[in-house]
Image (tube, one colour):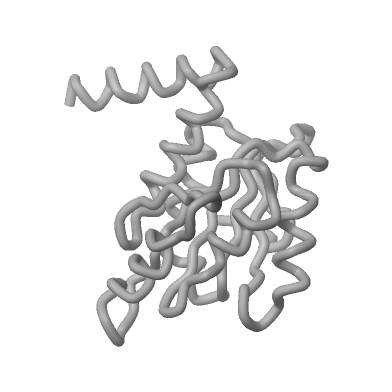
Length: 164
């Protein structure tokens, strides 16, 4: 479990490579799977709570400064009118992975459609509704495209899946 919401870092001395932003505290239960998977892969990360609608300046600061902090991939999770991933993508040159949260209103379809219907020039990758673990795997695959350590972690992970 993440001990501290703000700047939770899995490896104390490592610079976070993945930035996780969640729209509200209620998303943390699902997004713990992202943190757990990144921990398994030994990928350092930071996690913040910032809403595209309630705290847009915080989202701007998080996404706009991610590259300078050494972040390589952003994972953004939100529900309902889920504009968080798109707003992050607007403020960063980094790849953004969206995790639509399941909602009581429309079962997460509202979140999913908000995330995948991005305008041209502002792409966002999107995993399944509540697909927190897949977001971590995809982020690690992206890191692995430029870092053999993370590539090997994905190769080992897939081999282990094939053996079970």
